[in-house]
Figure 1 (cartoon, rainbow, N blue to C red):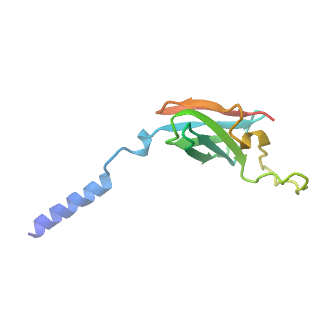
Figure 2 (cartoon, helix red, strand yellow):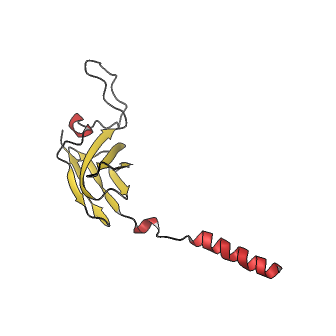
Length: 131
């Protein structure tokens, strides 16, 4: 009886460790690089908005690279914003800390020129923002 219990326990643990389903390596992924005026845009938020208005978002790394796992499929529109938003109109803010990226305001809304059709799998789309 003890051997049967051990065998069942071992089988259960093996099943839990092994998992049941695909790994995230097999998931749909959209990667790319965000640049502003040709320079990498570190610490900006990239939001991909699908035709059904579902969203996927990611934060860029030191070289402006982003990775969206399981983004919506179809024609995507993009919103790109800085972690530190600009001050309201008419308010003078102190200068930003060194290395802070300023994203042009037109990219904060999805009605800009950034459009990409994502068909699934692993695809790349670089976001080149203009000042």
